[in-house]
Image (cartoon, rainbow, N blue to C red; front, side):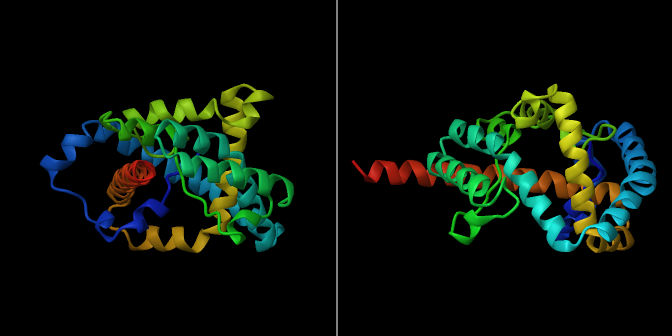
Length: 241
């Protein structure tokens, strides 16, 4: 479960400018369907469910509690990051993920406190879509589905694979685990960034294009960062011999 991630639109200044029509059709051939789904996600789900829930959440829970919940949700995503960093050949990063999980799950009390970051073990993301991109799998068309974040066809496959690496899927079905965790995470994140999302909504002339472009640019940058990190790891390993 997710709302249209308006933070994507604020990541890069260019995200606010829609591409030329000929460029857009290259990666958004289903634009008519996508726009209708985006409108449903934003004008119905976000406006009448997530945003009101986030306001109540924000009023009931102090900021420190919301931050701790964000840390706990991030800790639950460790298996996904660990597995994908191994698959990507980013072994030092995988080791850091494991160390972060141990520290935050024990000293950090089930991940509610990010002890690892204070010790210099910073978090960095990795997922199956990023792994597929690193190995040259093309993104395919941009895709917006009900209740899900922005995707491409490749990223939709990765999203499904990631749901099976959710620790909660050992107690519930992967679908139920993903929906439950994502709902809590989404409401908490929405509450944490209420002002930012409102600002993006007010200043963007074409919210659909802004979110789409921001998502595609963020995904491309994440793949480039993963390739760079892997290459640095390979060079460092070769220098040992």
